Image (cartoon, rainbow, N blue to C red; front, side, top):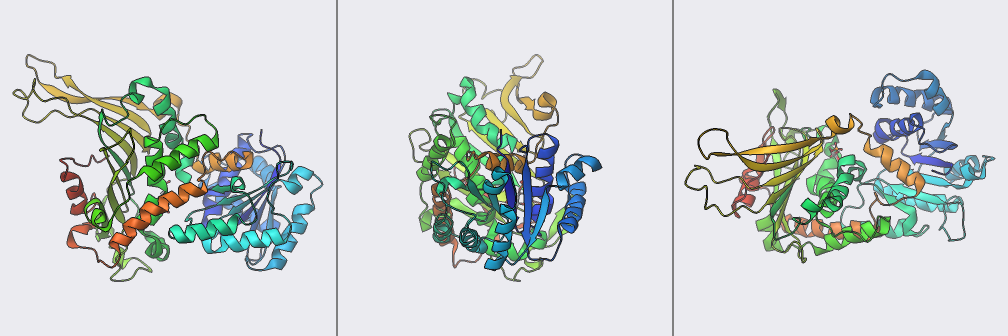
Length: 497
Ligand code: BG6
């Protein structure tokens, strides 16, 4: 059971609060998963009253909630717990007013159990923590304390390894690492959580999950959307920081890590860190051979014309920022030695799909070679993370008839068909876990830093070199030619979802 607590959202006027956080909290409430008593404070600069913020959030929930239509009476009961605190993030007096209101609760749980959710720009995380500490509402938890305070931090977590370390130092100046909950919303997805469950509960697959049987692994996170209105942010980030540093490396660590000692957060996170630390560092020469970036130019996607990246709002006309990344990584450990892991992600690709494909080694092509024109398809297992969540196993089967013809066929498990269309939003699970104090689905400090190390080496290899012709791709295609070349070197090819 989650203990009663108060949640304070910094950046309450932002998109994330309206689209994700409040709808998720409301959904938890509808499902009876919120604590018996709770309060939610929105903190932002704009002048608002509790009533006007409640009305605004009601509209947001009506629009973005996954349960429709909204039940007015239940909304009203939920909204009674919403409060708004107007204030500038840099103004200590605003935190004093917040602290006074936090302390006004008679219930000691609501007063002292506090979750501070930083949905602001990362440059403000440190300042917010300082101010909360100065106002007396955020402090290091000692073992004897029954009350607790936690800090939830949104991405981007730093800009590179050095800034991530600075940020980590700033935040942990006032709290212990175990009070910090760094979000990667991919970890809140059911199918991402299932990667580990699937691996370690199915003996038939787990015993194949190594260099003896696996030829290579492909992880694709393709997005149909372009950069849209986020040009300003994206110019600073690029696909490598925006997607690879967090989501793709998190998926990779779950796909490849060793079995944890237990299901405790620290056991699982220890294994993830070990895996990230086993990724072979890339020298400048490796980057040239193993890291491809791409940028979309104008094209058509599903009958709709898309602008080129350089024509997007707030994007420089000769920007070299990547909207696509493909990597070939090696994991230097006992299990994976020599097995390539290919990762790719991009915007304005033909469709939205995230998938892990484990391709097994081929059989010796001796028996059927004379009868089949094409080489036999190797076995593969795909974990489809989103949408159309499911798992498929590909193998070869005899085509019925009087010849020995073979054809690839698939065995498929579909989440919806099996479990019904129950797809909780990632933020529901993450908010619940943060309130419950379980850090399993959050990123630990050393994990962030290990991920940056990989990303930093790639950035260093790219810096100062403009994109080449082979790195541009038309919106609506599967990325640049260079990404195909990357796999072709080893006789592989991408399997598009
Ligand atoms: C975010 C990135 O972290 O993830 C976005 O900043 C991206 O650029 C988004 O579009 C993708 O998330 P999802 O859940 O839609 O796959």
